[in-house]
Image 1 (cartoon, protein in one colour):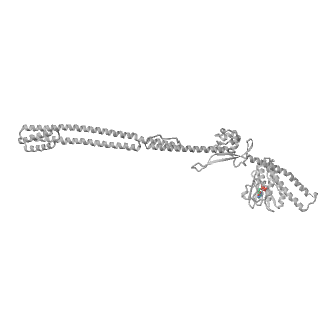
Image 2 (cartoon, rainbow, N blue to C red):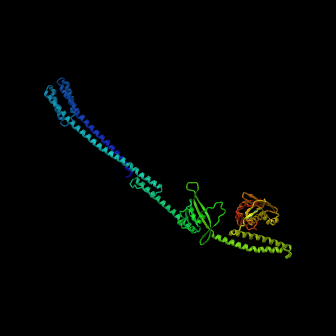
Image 3 (cartoon, protein in one colour):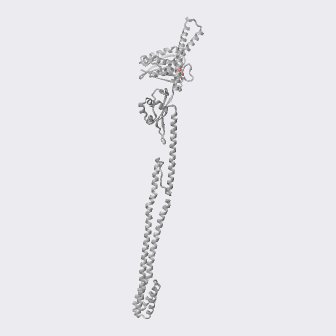
Length: 572
Ligand code: ADP
């Protein structure tokens, strides 16, 4: 039954019972009142008239007229108030006897007869009063019974409503509240179980449908997520580069097959384990999780034995950050370590370096013999040359000198790249290195009438350096400065001590370098666009390698159009 109907029925029934109760009570009161009025009207008045007639009868002998009038009046009233059976007959007898008495008021026997008649009437009415009183009593008892019955029914209904109705309404609400809480806690399998055919039944049905749909939605999302996870895992697994994922506490989340191959462990041995714990027993993992900071000079490729040969990998650690929904600050959720297999490039690079080394080495000897032949040609013993021939020889000398420089640079570079650089580090006098370099470029400077000014203290402390390589670097700085300076300018060579190092500076007032290219001039094969193409773009790159191999630093300050200051520093 619907709650509304239940409530309507309950309250309506109660209301009806109250009305019935009041009707029964009023009706009973009415009946009792009618009975009492009936007694009063029908019998009590007769007794009153009878009493008056008896009194008048006693007065007749003293005050005849007045007594007869009174008697008559009362007899008349009695005649009008005949209510009981037999009363009419007695009243008629009384009337008849009274008529006789009027004629002879002193007749005592008649008086006695009249008294008897009056008493007979009184007795009739007394009996009637008793009878009617019994009826009234019975009416009152019946009324009491009905009132009790209806009252009890009212009480039972009210009691039933009081006990059942609040529970009927509150219990399903309680159950529903608990279920809603469960759903809010993502327990979508929760259902309510009141199946009554009332409003709560409808509510339960709707709630269960909602919960089922939420469950389906949740399951489908989970499936989707699971599917996407699988897809990503497959994608990562199929990648040829080794990839390892760590959470923000360094726990390994995933590792693809390639990575497992190179670290030589099984998936179950790494997943869920701390990378730093694994690093204790696995050197490779240790070098993988090692983060390079800005102070680490340069990224060295990792040499790992993989795919049956020595392979080279470039390591990249990607820090993964996200901005959680509703928040503004980024949080770190872990790292992904990617190893790029650069073996092929390394092999090609190696082949190139070998080729350069061989070619430059093979070229050196013929160029040297060309230079020797040129010297012989210049010697007068081999015969005089005319001016044109002298100029040609001069030009061949310049070119062979340049070729020698280029082959020298290429040879240096190949030595650097193969790691075959031999350093002869010893305590060297920086001033002496400067003098040596200045001497070496003197001819070149003279050709452009450039003044080389040394600004250096001869007594500066020695530096720990390979003086030959350092001299080579300074010569390279100086020949660049001469090359990119205008004729008759001045180039300063400065030496100064800064904390525990000596700084070598070559200051020119040449064309300078555009700020865009400042950071690139030390890169291999880089030449500032628009500059003389005579060089190889290797001189500064080799200089940097030489100085860094000696734990020094290089750098340049330059303003386009005003000149440049190339410097390098070495530890004392
Ligand atoms: P290159 O053999 O081409 O000179 P370097 O490595 O010695 O190669 O120099 C790289 C580039 O730096 C040059 O091409 C040149 O443009 C620029 N450069 C080097 N030194 C100077 C300088 N003193 N003034 C202006 N530009 C210079």
